[in-house]
Image (cartoon, rainbow, N blue to C red; front, side):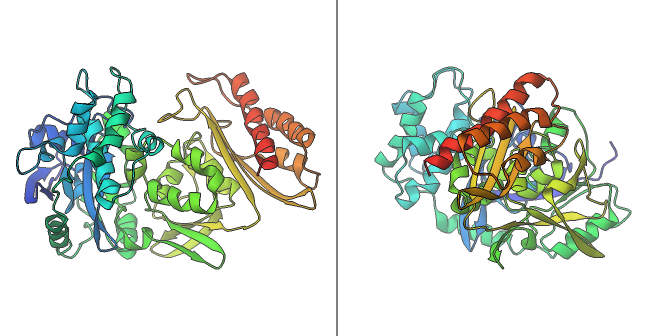
Length: 478
């Protein structure tokens, strides 16, 4: 392809590893299996659905090492620059004993054909470090949530969930956090970043400062911009696209912050979905099930909120909720910035207002303390599946009447939309079951959805009305 290839440095088993000539768009799974020769990590679906390729990466967060399970099949290899990589081969203890995540799977008979087992073990390892390491109990419900990104076609999930709950019963594994911290601290002493030159034929650039990211964006407007690359990885594995120039904004410090200011929740565009959703659940607790059903945990650990918005899938689950919450976007370039509402950002199917030299930098959400916020989705599979339709509602009721309302929907048009006609049916009206039914009848006629492999247009129209009506019993029982 005539592409310039870069060196990649990371840490594995507490040792520094440097690989030369790694193409910008090489996937982490290809690097693990082909360059490192480690065959425990499997390719199942090549699209982040099955979890057979799950590995764990470590990075420093707030001065402490933090481990995250991710899908390696759709993650670019260069994204782990100066991070720590764990594969299933790394888990055996220094004395030869299996790690508790492995031993629990053996003792609970959690493996049959074994193809998916390494991915499950790595997700269990991440759970072990998140919970058992800090003496936090693992409930069956938590195990179901954390393992939702791993699929098994043989055993069923009971013994695997039993294994998750059994991990605390073993002597604690000797994963040296001191050594892990030392590796990651060494990684932070990298050379100062240098933006790729205008004439550079290919590169994988991972800036840490916003000004560097914006300069690279302006200099290379045709470069692929990624956060977690959970969509872009699919374009490589499924469409066999190739990208010579990639700008990875996942480590830009200004884009990784979460704060509250002037009555708003402000999320940096590079904040991973897992972290963004944790904050949203705190402020809008009735959205927890909806957010937990967004893909699986390894996807949420990689994907970023800004990336999900920029991709603009009409069935992307975050957009209906952000529309309902009246979220505003900050768009920045090297020459300035502007703002727009999420609902106004999209101009067509996967088309938006973002200029060739701009990045989404912040998502601002007003914190209306008296708002009632709910969100629902329908999908063929309950967990780890794309929506057929989705609906989110934010509503304020004063003296029994709806004083403010916003409804966001997905799967009903070529882009995420606001259901303004249904809103008008409820605004200023006494809130009742009959009023909600009238709004549901309205929303069923407000859009012209398509029929596809997931559902017919008629089903979608009826389903969106049913989702809206779910809000009434939840409001009544609040």
